[in-house]
Length: 273
Length: 273
Image 1 (cartoon, each protein chain N blue to C red):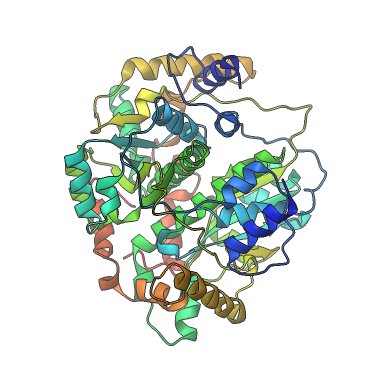
Image 2 (cartoon, chains in turn blue, purple):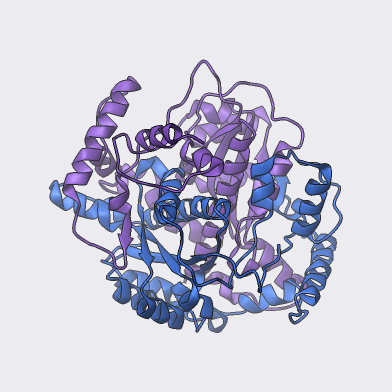
């Protein structure tokens, strides 16, 4: 793979010239080329694609091999439409041929415990929710790498957490199962192509040896400028990054209902001790 | 890539013959070949590898592009030794040339808010811890895919959550930052090779259309047998899967101190509302 490929990939990923010198091969090129796809062709996935995504997901690490995750594959139009409503009307949830819903699943171990007459009181702790959420996210990301290798595209839908009870009712989720996020999958619509979104300069997220708590204001301002240039190119409002991110975490009323997550999880059977 | 490659990969991943017909290419073959590496050569990573892993990690999706994660790269022998002690003496933490510590980082947005004189009360909710944990896990898994493509191997260390305060003190983590897990990285020791670990049959984790709450006892018993055969081949105690998993979640005293996670997070500045 050529040096030009590497330079272009880094420029797109950071929205700026960078002096980064990174190891390079086709897999890394593929990872750096990731883009969020929200516009899909209507044709279904090829035969064996779903099964390949799930096999890839199962190949991700799992905490103590507990495999505390599951996934629901939704192809039915009515169910996708109702999931889209939970996600504040995001059209791609209704339009994608496949919507995966990645679950932190503590119910399976609970059921095995009942079946074998053994206690599972450890499931009632916040730690185990964390294990389930991490397991589900690692699995989903392997599925994303796999689907992109097949020419498919995707977008995660955190907005399913706006109303976990509606999602649970829709998908028949038992207690102790949380839909961590949705995942729209399909062939990207070539008429509405997606772009690589720039990220923070590497030195902002990578700490060497110890965490450096000093706020890298210069690097963050440079990134705000890079995001404004990106937004201009996308004909999006030029809001930059920092102020938009701060708006998102302003207070409980900016969390789209997710300020109730703890209360809802408690109702859904999670002990959260 | 040959049919034989696909069949062998599926047999290793599920520890059994399977009738699965999955889409196949080199990337998917690489994902399915994942194995947990705990025995490393002592030589350091090649130039540009760490930077490639972080660029790959940054290329993973991030919730609303908030980028609520950071990573600390630890190469110092004394720090690795102390991290190894937190992880109940896991030797590979001290022996790996590089230990990455993946952080759910809500402190950066808090600092930007203070810098710009804007409120960030939304950070005080369980939802935002979830966002940080998911962001960190997605990032880490992309790093894992990247490092394996470079011939490196790794293992995640959830046991850093046994004592988040010790890890925070060691790495200088500010409030509102949690070490979600560690990640030992290096060249696999060819004299102590790792094997692909079988996972649950695909039908146990994949639900079509709706969640099926019926416990697939037959499939789980078959998997118990597959794990016993795997453990025999590895000269490990033949405990199977279900009983070992149940032992892990038996109660608070089987969580290696992580039953205190909620209390520790509260002390570490997380609102968890």
